Amino acid sequence: MDPAPYASSPCQMAEDAETRRDVMRWRKAERARLIAARQAMPVAARAAAEAVIIQGLDAEPGTIIGIYWPFKGEPDLRAWAGLRRGQGARIALPVVVEKAAPLVFREWLPDAPLTRGVWNIPIPDADAALLIPDLVISPVVGVDPGQFRLGYGGGFYDRTLAALRAGGHASRVIGVGFTMQAIPTIFPLPHDIAMDKVILG
Image 1 (tube, rainbow, N blue to C red):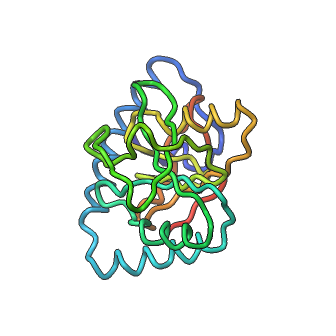
Image 2: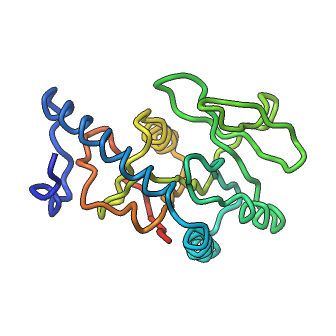
């Protein structure tokens, strides 16, 4: 699908069956392209980009911060999270509870054991405290000018944002990624939820 006809429109697309099928097909191909480009980044370029992202995040307030364990070349913010923990913030990692459900966030402590979750991504044990972040850092596969996020296709972050807002939680969501991940549009559908801010390095 060529993004050009829709690139200037901030509106979400109507979700009839044919449109949804076309968008999902396009997203699958674009997701593969963007992940490959991200994983091919030279080490020095990645380090410089991560420094830019961290500089932007340093200015963001948060007492309970939901981050993520880096996967498939995502920016690595674990050291930054440790610094924020040292400044008094509590750090949480997202956990998939079940398919088609919102994520939950469990506290990540430096010496606490981790187990393997979906896609073998490390997550806190089931006895780790459940937290509701006031700041959620969300890695993007792609992102458009409307701050709509292209992820891995499971819909977990959209469901999580919807659940947080429905519960009255004033959680801010900041998308992070590399400049190569900025695209003209993700062709947002009615279930897609825009983030509050995006920081690209």
